[in-house]
Length: 221
Image: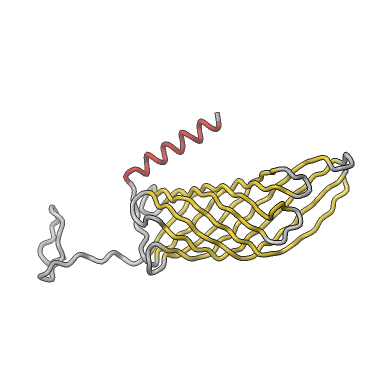
């Protein structure tokens, strides 16, 4: 039932986006708020575990309208239960915060759908708790993080868009991750504003063309 509602909601939003379009002009600001579903394979359990998360990012479009640069805050938590080598009941909880500088390259910078690929790098702050037969062990660690997102922005209006993406995350020197890899699937909403206005088309005689039906004439305003 919940899956049907989610699918119907997505279809309605995509239909609403059919007539929407937006340009990424130099100086445009992009604010994106995403919910995340992350998966990772831990070393202790040797199994894939999943958990929720959230991302807040802000970027600004460069003078080349295909590129953006900014920063990203990503939090996620994963819990798992498994049986130890001596039949112990073990519960693991892993909390991570990524603070990164980011950049994205947009494959299309006008219209409804803006596909992109990007990169983020920065710091990771983590705490984790391993509870064995009711006896908890807590620790924390900090390290480098690298993220590689690929996704699409779907514009609902000139200033509001949906964001869908998959992000590959590499977290260096972790004590509990196998291969130091986390996969993140994200969906959310974004807002864009500002940017340099589009230059008006000027005719050879120095006047600004007026659309048919406008009350303005010639070079007047």
